[in-house]
Image (cartoon, rainbow, N blue to C red; front, side, top):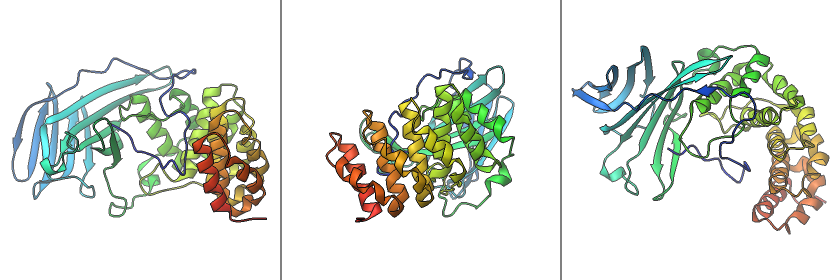
Length: 360
């Protein structure tokens, strides 16, 4: 499955493919064999599916539409309320797959489960494939609910399964405990400092989701992340910049939740001089998420525009666009960037100029 796409006109990640972490990453035990249906029973109110030797998935139905899923897998009870989700009425039992994985290292042990299945009728089939649903749990908590539709013979687009406009408005504080901020930030050493380019999410990606969700509700998380920029390990500094962009960007959560990350602005400005291009780029984008209150970063952002790496130049333009009219001092440099050899830099520079206005 392919993951959510991020609007490139707003956010640019120079390298989306997963990279090998250079710090201690949670090791993954060889996954259990994929479990597929061995039998099922169906009635007007429920669909019960047996998978493998000891797993059961039960869909509660209302007018032939699934409104809830309950699963018994590996001794765990998993569930998810589907009443507020855009799930087509037809569910294809023969397409169902269930996978299990263990995450293990010296400091953490977790267990993930992913349920995949096709939905919809022949009218929903695009480029030979029906829409495919992914439900993923980590340590018994749902961390991903996606539906993927094919957009070409080789690519698909994934969206959140549930519509934030109609789903129950439950505070993240109501469903997640808030651990110590510093300890939570240290958990980011266990995940690669990059988002997956495809939807073949590994257990480490599910762990990332859990950490990010907890960062949203943990007091002091912004300052804890900011302190991480002083760490000697480049992979950890990349994770700091990426996580601050997640908190401040509004693109990670279903409902567009944002956290005010302005308390990290001094460290983000410092990170613009980091020797690593990804740290610089992602720090710049996080600065743009702060908006007009990040005007103090404009001089430092301008130092990125002459950089050789395209990612720094792109991200500087994106950040200046986010700051808006308060970045008017950047207009001469942005106008010069309209002649940059990179199409992306020219496009982002134009968007920044439009956001800032005519200026002097």
